[in-house]
Length: 302
Image 1 (tube, rainbow, N blue to C red):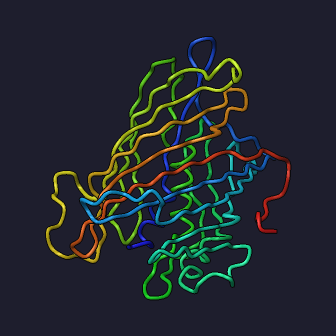
Image 2 (cartoon, rainbow, N blue to C red):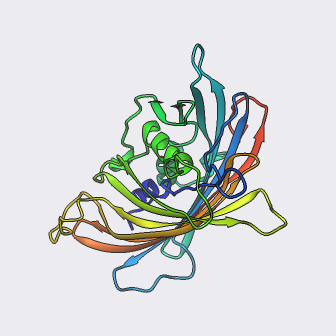
C-alpha cells in the first residue's frame, strides 16, 4: 500500500461558506489580528485492490493540529496568518498490526513512521491576505526534501496551499441566500503526482437547528483529477502515481457570529494508479476549529 502518497493526499480536505442580512449571508473567514486559532484535522484512509470491498477498519488514520496566529502586516491593511503544524498523531495497519506515531514521543514509533511523519511537525508558513481576503502571497521556507528510500514529506509550501484550500479557497466572494449554489476550482502542486485539480460545487442549505441560530450548513461535492480529463489513465507501469475517478461529498458548518468556518466533514473515493496497478481508496476527513484565543503561537506538544 503506497502510504506515502495517501499521506500527501490526506491533507487536502475541502472547505465551506455562510451569510448577510436576513436572507443573504457573507460566508468568509474573518481572522482577527491578535487572535490565535487552533484546528484539528482527522483523516481515515482505506485502500484495497480495484474490485475489492473496503474493510470496516481503516488502513491508517492521521490527526494533525494546526495553530494559526493572525497579525496585521506593518504599513498595510493586509492580514498575515502564520501557521504552525503543532502536532501529528497517526496509526498505520500492516499485516494485521497497527503501528502508532505520536510527535510528542516519536522515539516509540517504528523508524519508517518517524521518517514519514516526523518531518511534518513544526513546519511553518505564512499566508498574506488582502482586506478582501484574496491570497496575495505564500511565505514558506525552501525545505524541499525526500526522506529515507525516497519517501517524500510535504514541504511547507504544499502545507500552505492545502491550508488555504481548507479554509478559504471554496468560499464565495459574494453574499449568498439559502439554496444558492456556486462552483469553484483550485489547483495544487503535489509532486511526485501531477497537479491535483479540485472541481467543486457548493450549496447553502441554510441555518442549523433553533439551538444554533448563528450557524449555517453548506453542502459540498465535486471531483478531483491528477491529469487532464481528456488523457486516459496509463495502461503501462509508471512510477508516477495518478489519481482517477475521484469524487468527494461532504458538509460544512459556518458560524455567522464568529465569521469562521468551524467544521468540515468530507468523504472522497478514488483510484490511485502506481507502477501499473490500480488501488481503490476511501478517505474520510474532518476538520474543526478547536479554539480562538489571545496567545502566542506555539507547539501543541509543549
